[in-house]
Image (tube, rainbow, N blue to C red; front, side, top):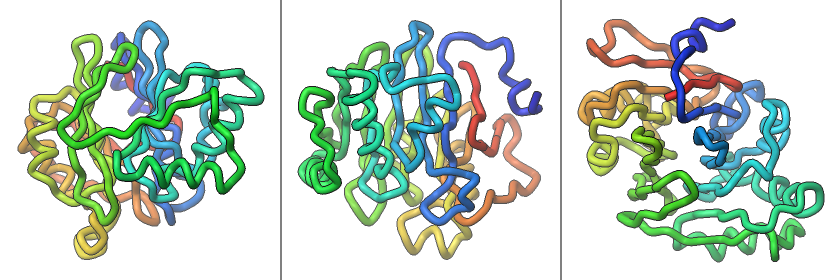
Length: 256
């Protein structure tokens, strides 16, 4: 059993499963960033739908009907191109009829167009719902709080509150003081780490140093890095005292 898995063995309540952890041009073995949060009741919340997300769900023992909702943080391909297949499975194999798909309000019409262009009629299967920075919604066992991310297209970061726990997902973003406030004293910060300093900041992304900075400034207890560039980043010691930092890999799971 992997050491990183052992760290969280014995914890209860919320489960977080990393289905994919790569960016658009990462090594294929990393997949594209998609994260499943499961409540103790079994309700599933999917954060982004990268390519191959359906295969990953099935591989890890889940199905589309286990999902109550999906959040698409923005419409870049590595975060959304798995959604058409997911909705096709929902309609033709699993007879899902009430899936809620949240996306930036400015992008809902484009998301609808994307689905229809590739031949996905999601009528009666899913509802596309636009959300704005500063808004919050109740989704099954979860309450979601949204903030604007710093990215070239409309993009969201979000906080998930459930069962007395707090999880924050950066989505794709450069360093953002609003994200620091959103993640204040959270149990878990999931933050992108897309490349070296210059590469990341040119394109509205963060590097490892930015992610650690957000974790420290927010007082987050654990930091998990995702959305790597070509390969996994390096963690250079010393890291800030008291902060647990982990590199996610496909299939990595933890319990809060």
